[in-house]
Length: 146
Image (tube, rainbow, N blue to C red; front, side):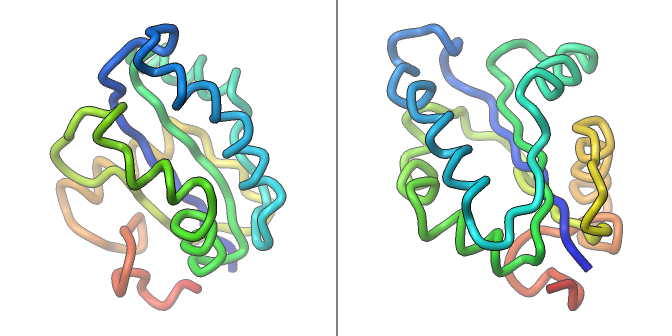
């Protein structure tokens, strides 16, 4: 069984602000690395997530990614052991501190293509109810889903 994930953050600056230039200028490379990483299956297209964020009332400072992976370990390896991890270590430069989880993971079929709206609902469920089959976060909270 594969897993889907959604992670999000609220940027300190608008995407076209000079202070966000380094982050925004590297997004395409970071996404390309994900798409080439062993275990990667799919990522929601940028235009689709932008539209879904807008329909939910979020402004352009909301940043989110929804993707499908062969398992948690492939996602973990990409997240922490690639260029993505280097940027993750610098999130405080570009992102506001938020309360609650910024990541939700759940089991899916490999051909699943979850929407941002479904993922956001799962994140809110995790925030309110804790880890479950509907969604969980990192370490041992994976309920056996590898």
